[in-house]
Image 1 (cartoon, rainbow, N blue to C red):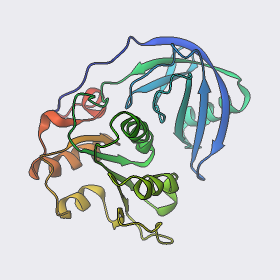
Image 2: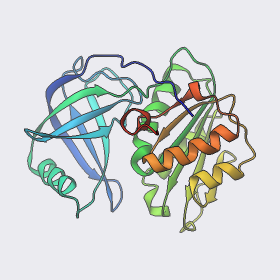
Image 3: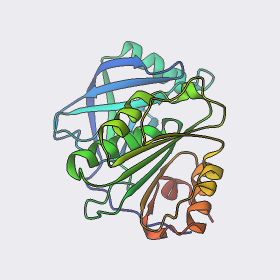
Length: 254
């Protein structure tokens, strides 16, 4: 299944920004707020940036906030203590007031000309990319339907569960489908557009009583997760030109 990508909306820039906040979002995920010159920090919903660890090491992260014109960007970072780059980044954020980054990158951005319903499928911290897309769509296309599917291993990994539930409770065009491999520790918030499914995301999509021909689909996760979902989406009618993921650029399937 091929996929269409959208051209980047701006030339990639290298700049220095301020670290204004670092907070734990869960035991394994922390949020980082960066601030820089408003015109230099501009990006499209769905794009990512790269943080510099040293002269030769740049680490990519999805931008978790929609463009507001204020030079503020939010990141969601998975902390893996056993991985060198993760530990180095966490240590750097704890001591550095400034970071060097380059942005924007990525062609998996919202098509502002489309009015098709959005199907957003994220695994783990892939939620960050979808958060920016949801925020931008609610602001720019408030009538556009959004179906958010967020897959994690355990309940605690839904680190922004309250926000996702709030969207579904507040906006009638938004639904939230939580997918966990293990049972929930406690029920999700109540709401007719809030649902939980247990299992692996591709298998859950296969069992869903849905066809996907009408959707613009955005996928964020590992290559294995993205392509497993694509196989199901294709079998259930998704149009290849309306399926988008950064994975198509950095890990194309032969």
